[in-house]
Length: 159
Image (cartoon, rainbow, N blue to C red; front, side, top):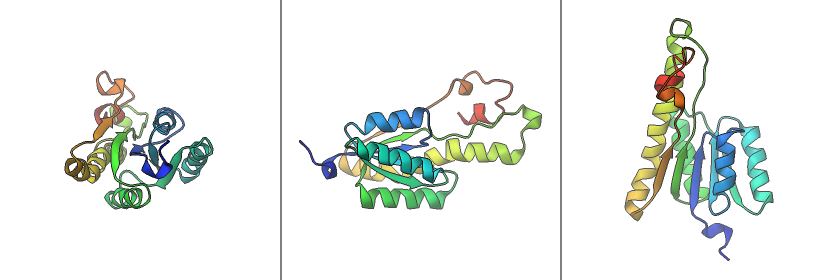
């Protein structure tokens, strides 16, 4: 059986109690998983759960609207787990509001997490993937990106 250190690395970005956690648990069956989101306490709990079940997990708290924090997160992932083989970008802000109720700041922050953060994470892993000749990047979407609701003035366009 392969050792935990030899497992390929999957970085799950946007790990909350829903889809992000489900993805992390599933990938932990064959990968060392990097769990990235804002909530340090939640990430630590999920990492402990995965480790307790025999997996390998690293909790990395980061603001996914921050270029500096994303860069630091991927440095830590590379240093502690190894190069990322699979990137799953699941992060999003989901503010509720109609167009005229949504502030420019809310719209921009939603875009930064959902779009700009995805771009920065891809930039962090693609050079290594190209060098190794393989790698996978997955971006989650939402129905609101295709058929937005009246109250998804920021979330819909970001997805």
